[in-house]
Image 1 (tube, rainbow, N blue to C red):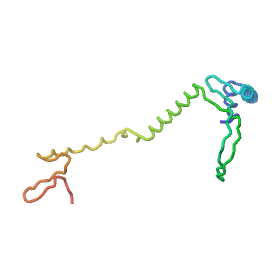
Image 2 (image 1 turned 180 degrees about the vertical axis):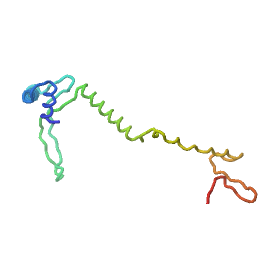
Image 3 (image 1 turned 135 degrees about the vertical axis):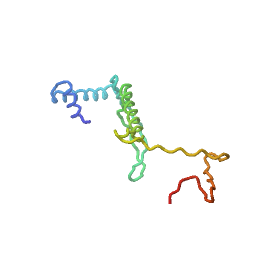
Image 4 (image 1 turned 90 degrees about the vertical axis):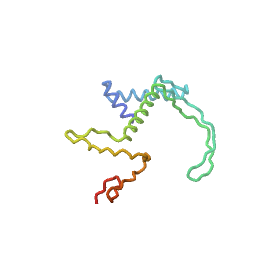
Length: 154
């Protein structure tokens, strides 16, 4: 989202012109920067804390050439989100995880109206006495022909 989009949303929500809202938003940003320069810290309740910290000098590498480079110390702005922001972002992560879990499961849809029920499976014959459960049946020998126990159609 850009500053222009923020201005548009706020102006529509509170009923001010975009020009007046832009001025207010810019003054707010300027006040944050000015406070950081003078006080090195600004705390906005339920939003977060901006703070100026000194980053120590260090040795780094140029990623293109691989040469070692000395990086001087410098001031940087850090941001630590407030509890309210972290809570809302965490909820976003949990919602995304829920959606991913739901998307990975196959959809369960009811059968179309008026359709026939699923075909009934015929029960298997009980195993013969002494047969090992889960082992294939041995079949039977009757009147000079062998039956394997399963129905075969040539």
